[in-house]
Image (cartoon, rainbow, N blue to C red; front, top):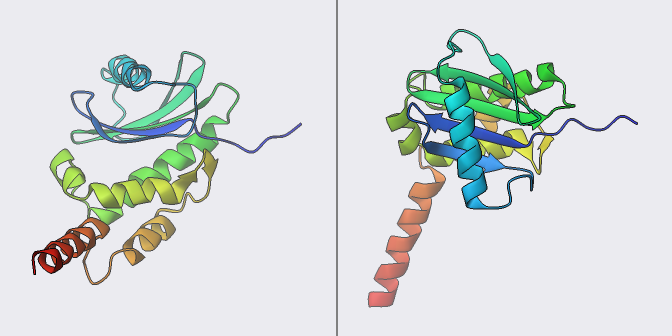
Length: 171
């Protein structure tokens, strides 16, 4: 029986192993502590590798993890041990390239945190419920960019709406 490839999680960690943006699509890690422990273990296992020019693949706790680093950011895509590494690598490359496009090549922690809403939307465009939706970076970045109206991101639009609501309540 052939099943659809699925993703367990997508992680974006900083150079110290702290979360920048993460999304889990599996109940394999039921608690926040389990997720944080997994992230720390993955970071510790991979931090000494040189995954800057191309993606690296490793097995860890019966999961296949594909990862790539740029500046102070570490990108990870995790799948089950039965998943195809090439598919996981394609998802990783799509995530990596679309973040690069959305951040206009300035892929570092500070810029990623300033544009966290775009990165989270990017993850949502790539995978939904563990099912891979899109891997083409241009298509992903295009869909995320259309969620920004005239340079106004979703978080900026929400902040403006909050201000308007607060003003109307104070009147």
